[in-house]
Amino acid sequence: MKKVFAVLAILGLFTFGISSNVLAQEGEVAQEETVQNEAPAQEAAPAEVAQAPAQAAQAEATPVAEEDGGMYKALKIKFIEGGAGFMASIALCLIFGLALCIERIIYLSLASTNSKKMLQDIEDALNEKDTEKAKEICRNTRGPIASIFYQGISRIDEGADVVEKTVVSYGGVQTGLLEKNITWIALFIALAPMLGFMGTVIGMIQAFDKIQQVGDISATIVAGGIKVALLTTVFGLIVAMVLQIFLNFILTRIEALTSEMEDTSISLTDMVVKYQAQK
Image (cartoon, rainbow, N blue to C red; front, side):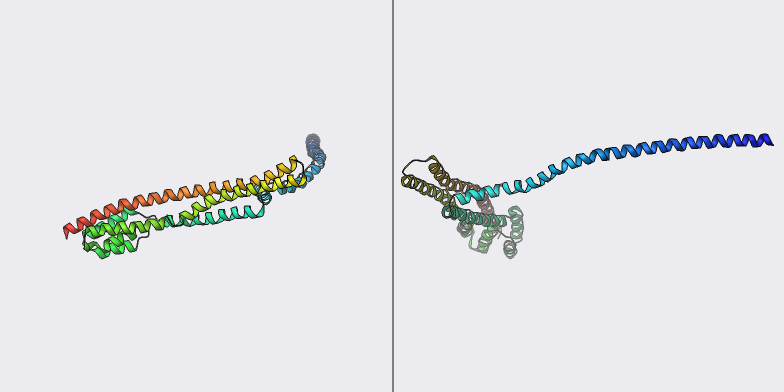
């Protein structure tokens, strides 16, 4: 019995010793991990302190950079340097020219239609001898082609020659509506650089007047006056180029619509001839 208690006591001491060693090792490992975690934090603190002035300096420099830059501000400064009178007139040319260009683009976009489908529907209606249905199709379709077709079909009983003359005459009217305000856009394209050149000439005259008043040729006076004078020409040419791009696009759309009007008018004449033959 004593041997049993002795064996149990020895086993208990052995188990307690192993447990103590394991706990001690785990405590040392935890302590080492704590030290390692604290060390980078302590090392990061000086780095953060060192970065703080740099971040503060960057924060102070950012508003300055934002205040300095921007194409809009540069253009504004150059616009003011060019003189209020001529630069304002050039700006008005740009505003009115762009307004007319946008109006023409919207009008031409609305004038476009599916002419092939409309021709097919009108041909089906004429084959059925239903001219009222053909007129209704034209009334419900937007664009100059539908208007031309309506005028032609309205005179279908008067003969193919009358229909052809009506289509040609009303086609000229619709072409005039498509080309509306084009001359005004061309005027602003020509006027903007002319105003710029006039501002340049007047600026040069003012520069020479300053030289005459001073009595000596100063590079500063001449350079400043010439720079201000040339700004009006630069802005005038920019306005003319921008408006010219829009004008070319508009003329291309008008040309396409005019060609489509001519093609569809020929098809309408053929349908009218066929209708008169079947009548």
